[in-house]
Each structure stands twice: as structure tokens, then as C-alpha cells.
Amino acid sequence: MKLYYSAGACSLSPHIVLEEAGLPYEAISAPTKTKLLPDGSDYRQVNPLGYVPFLVLDDGRSLAEGPAIVQFIADQVPDKQLAPPAGSWARYQLQSWLTFVGTELHKGFGPLFNPDMPEAAKAIARQRLLARLEWLEGQLAGKSYLMGDQFSVADAYLFTVTNWAKPTGLDISGFKHLAAYRERVAARPAVQKAMQAEGLM
Image 1 (cartoon, rainbow, N blue to C red):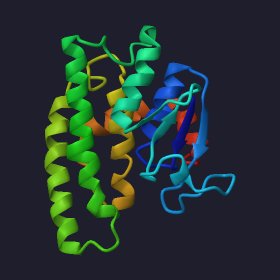
Image 2: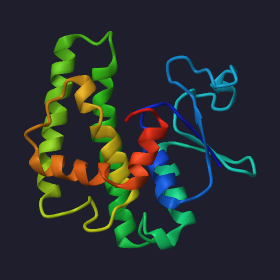
Image 3: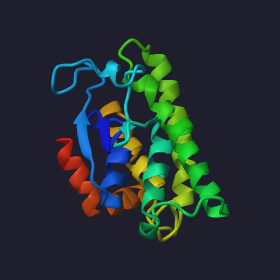
Image 4: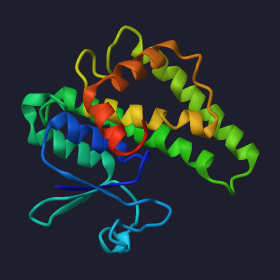
């Protein structure tokens, strides 16, 4: 398997999940700004959309979109319990979390990374994000991870996205449950290995 990633981008999520899964893979840097692969070729020849993550299997099949990729990886190693069994109620709960992180948080950070976005619009985006994170703070109370005591692919995604608070100037220091949660996730060996590979530590 080949995972195309850009350091610190949302592709860190499947990078973490691959490390958690213990599956053999090759991580290939595909910076979102330059679109240039290490061999100098244009990443858009691999993925015409030009964004990450992008997973290419050994048989040539490929998969885009982080939430789909992490569930695929998890299903290759069911014994690791990175995702509940397909068709179970818990699996739909996991998909609900992946969707929340993707649509309410991930997309919410978009305006904060856009240099052309007016400051007034960024202020609205920050306000909306903080409202979502305040709700999340309550959901994390009394839990080790989003799904309870078991780490899942949704945690890799939430950890990745909340990493963007500091570079975008979003103050999340008031969320004590989120802070403790982020420390737990950051301490996982697979998380540290993926972050080191991307030069984030």
C-alpha cells in the first residue's frame, strides 16, 4: 500500500491508523502547495484532485477521502478493533463521529488557513468552531476516547484536526477534557511514529 500525504494535513489521520494497524505501507510526501512528489513528478498524475490523503493498493486500486480510507484500513485488521464491525450500531456511531469531525471541524478550519479570507470571516469561523468544540468537550467527559475506552479511527481524525488550533490561532486551552484527550492520543506510540515520519515532532 502507498499513502500519499502532506505533513500535518488531514492525511496524518490515515498515517496514524496505518501505524496502529501494523500493516506494511509506503508513505509518500505529496505537499499540498507544490503538488510535487519526491521524484519531481506532478502528484495530480496520481490523484487528479491534487489533495491528500490518497491510498493506492498493491493491485492498483485507489481510494480517496480520509474517512473512507481509515475505515478500509481498520477492516483489514479487525482484531485491532480500530473500527467496530460493519453493520453494527457502533459502526454507525463511528461514522457519525467521522462525519462530525469532517464537516463540522475539518471544514470549519478551512477559512482560517485561507490568506485571502477577511479577518471578519475568520472571526465567524473561530466562533463556530469553538461552539462545536464546546459541545465536544461535554461528549469527552468521563471517556478515554470518542467511542469510550477503545481507541478508534475517529480519534486519529479528531486528534489531527485539533492539531490545527495552534497554527490558526484558535484558543482551545479552556477545554480541559479535550486537552486530556489530546495528551492521551499523542502518547500512543503509533501517533508518535506517524508524527515523527512527517517531521511534526
